[in-house]
Length: 70
Figure (cartoon, rainbow, N blue to C red):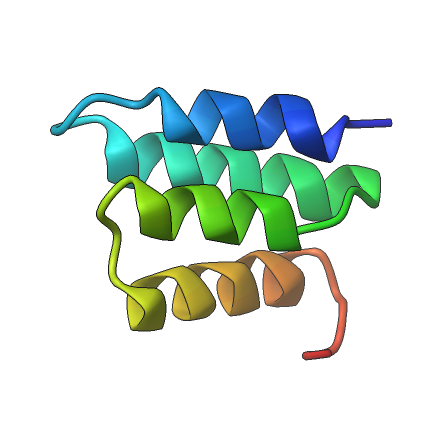
């Protein structure tokens, strides 16, 4: 199972130009493996990603893995 703290640290360390793709990967990994997405979302926002984008990306990850919005 994915470690939400490890994924959040990965997202927090992403440089400009790699944040979107890296966050998308982390979101998909977290959802697929049942890890908490809150720490990943917080790290993405602290790293400069827009809250609306973060929420849309997490919703897309849940949809891709057949999960409902929670």
